[in-house]
Amino acid sequence: EVQLVESGGGLVQPGRSLKLSCLASGFTFSNYGMNWIRQAPGKGLEWVASISSSSSYIYYADTVKGRFTISRDNAKNTLYLQMTSLRSEDTALYYCARTWPPDYWGQGVMVTVSS
Amino acid sequence: DVVMTQTPVSLSVSLGGQVSISCRSSQSLVHNNGNTYLSWYLQKPGQSPQLLIYKVSNRFSGISDRFSGSGSGTDFTLKISRVEPDDLGVYYCGQGTQYPYTFGAGTKLELK
Image (tube, rainbow over all chains, first blue to last red; front, side, top):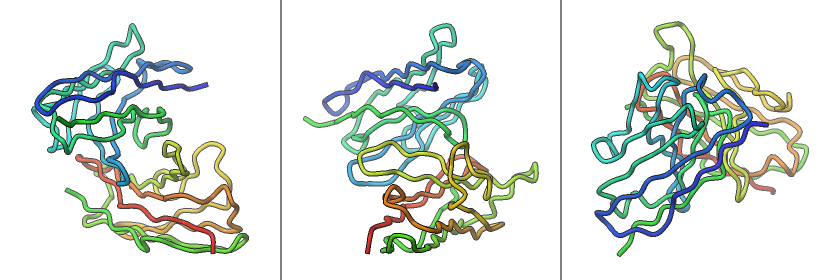
């Protein structure tokens, strides 16, 4: 069974950093591109970043480019999102999702940016 | 960026009825490789989104044939027949033809 479990969220002050993790199981992680997608409270879905299976290709939404870094460790079956210079508008539930279109999604991890 | 416009914003349906949701893109979603990367998702209350349809009309594994997708170019439709209680939630279309990937704003399906 495919499972994606996010962790690392929480309450953080504006301008600070946070690193999210997504532990994958039930499939060969190194064979799949992965994504981070977020959903602000009561809002729709926003694609954040994608990384190819071998990390050769990485793409970001303009809203996070230069502040967020997506990465992966295939030996640990883990996807990461390093978030810096956080803003209030980054407050959202962050999902990790497999491939595109995203066929499996994690349960999400909440990030709240507030002073 | 490709803007995805969904209509209607909300929809009321009786159990057993049929509904259609429209999704229009600001640019053609036909990729250079000939594929059209338009997909549909359902987010049930309190849950993560789930993939229903990919590449316009292909049902994802385990998805009922009551769900069907159609369309081409910039104009797409999701039809749900014989609506069941478990179908209720917010439906999103999304494009993966070009970065940045984008989603529609969602259509909320409610019981009449």
